[in-house]
Image (cartoon, rainbow, N blue to C red):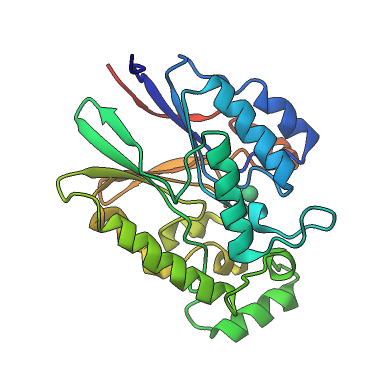
Amino acid sequence: MEAVVTSLYAVSDLHVGHTDNRALIDDMLPSSPDDWLIVAGDVAERIAQIRDTLARLRESWSRVIWVPGNHELWCMKNDRADLRGEERYRHLVDMCRGIDVTTPEDEMPVWPDDSGPVVIVPLFVLYDYSFRDAGMSAEEALQDAYDKGIVCTDEFLLDPEPYPTRQAWCAQRVRESQRRLDLIPRESKTILVNHYPLKRIHTRRLFHQTFAQWCGTTATEDWHTRYRATDVIFGHLHIPGSSVVDGVRFHEVSIGYPRERRYRGNSPLAPRLIRTLS
Ligand SMILES: [Fe+2]
Ligand SMILES: [Fe+2]
């Protein structure tokens, strides 16, 4: 008999390499065994830890939908350093399939919303430095980041192989994502899920604007309207919150690092409720 779905939750940036965050996973339980959980990237860096965390969540949630963050794509010493770029991503996809976790390469799940079916679209789009300061070239923006000492670790650990650059990999991911999005029937609403914000405006909340160049691509600026989204789920910024743009609800659902939570004082420790069926 088909399970009756009750609620849809979303979370991101679990960063379970941090002991305090690992302890939170035990409490990430659904309100009903039929609930679904979206995990919008940055689970961990090491493949075994990513697998164990997602498998554990899948034990208690009826469905788990994952998209990669930049941390899953890092090549760490002593952790399958041979798996780089696209090959590493494909390895993670195969691993998720082995534990029944949905990825951006799988059939898109359909949420049976009270208002009609909503297609959940897991995306892996990456970034291409186009969220940089508008007055700078890409080279100038990167140099400016080095000068300020605010350089994303991706520059050292996120290998885009076989693509020559992360921009080129991003461009390919944009094309592939659009190909899939264009297959969704025009009458269907969507919930878009990506590790990075789809709109530049959401990076305005970053304390260091220099960091925005590692946070998305302007190629996705209108996807929330073009692809009929009711909600957009993302993380990466480690600035949890919700807002409405063009009538679409945007949810930054990150847990982030323990030190960030201590600094903010009231950061969420649990997945965000996105939808509940009546
Ligand atoms: Fe993160
Ligand atoms: Fe991230």
